[in-house]
Length: 389
Ligand SMILES: [Zn+2]
Image 1 (cartoon, rainbow, N blue to C red):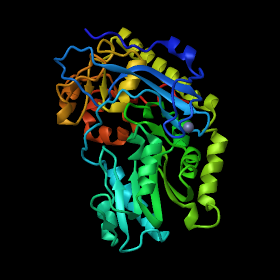
Image 2 (cartoon, rainbow, N blue to C red; image 1 turned 90 degrees about the vertical axis):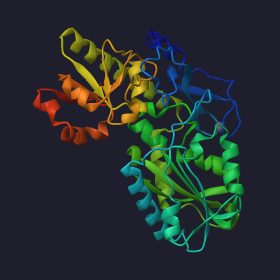
Image 3 (cartoon, helix red, strand yellow; image 1 turned 180 degrees about the vertical axis):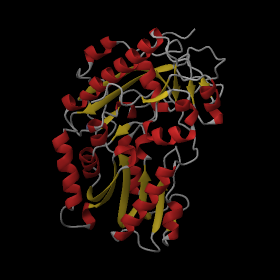
Image 4 (cartoon, rainbow, N blue to C red; image 1 turned 45 degrees about the vertical axis):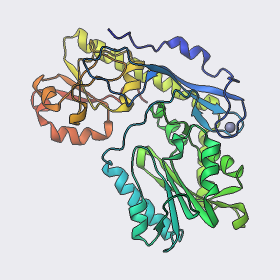
């Protein structure tokens, strides 16, 4: 039997405690605050077989905000395996094409330039698009005119080392392109379950500017994308190569971040309130449905559902199964819970009264793909919207 979810509201008692034992992954200073604590969580990419009774290994999952440079980061480093490269979501492919077109329009992708890419372990390369514009992808470790990092650097435990490696490979007059899911977005949209093992940094442009300054670089311009609710692509150049100040797009991003308060531990602690309200709402709804004899099943065995299920103390007594379209996940179990993953056909066969959708972006798609749910009198419920706002 798997132990009940380990989240304990008393964890919140030490939220905001000044933690001196941690050294900032970027500036190496020791002063900062724990701003978000999800208790102990399993590695969200490790789906055990349903026949494996557990318990699954769990590790503390906390976000720490550096008081000196402002980088929000993973506090502990349990070293968990990354999700393997899989099929690229269509949204990522489309955004890459859009981004490359916009950077090219700004004159930063000249034909013949040498490009080196630091990719994400989750996949998604821009090299084909860049080669199509006449840039030359570099093999090995030579110097490049364009260094591209698309969701790559966040996976480095040593942030200062990772940035030094990238700028060290940049040829004179080169440009560093960094793309990241913005901390401003995470705060404004209450995306607390963006916090996960293996993702060591949660960048604001403000914190990145400080990291870049430490290696003699400055932001030059930025582009904004709707991906993940708000993603920033930043172009940075060596201070020695340019004169003048960052452009208006950089100033606008920095001003917006200042208004949000991306370096203010009290603002970031608001994410803990989102954890509490969403967890309490999910548990309350499922308990009420169970008491009323309604059948509720889940849909979407996504990694981001796991922290929610565990903080809400939801196990198979409240949610008997989660369906997923991926055949690779059949016969597995939601990590850290007793909840099996089933096929969409089985979900339909069980005629649920309600289906908790854990990937709200898919609402329109699942209603079309599985009309039987509503035809049988069932209802789709956006689990992300419970307890929000
Ligand atoms: Zn720092």
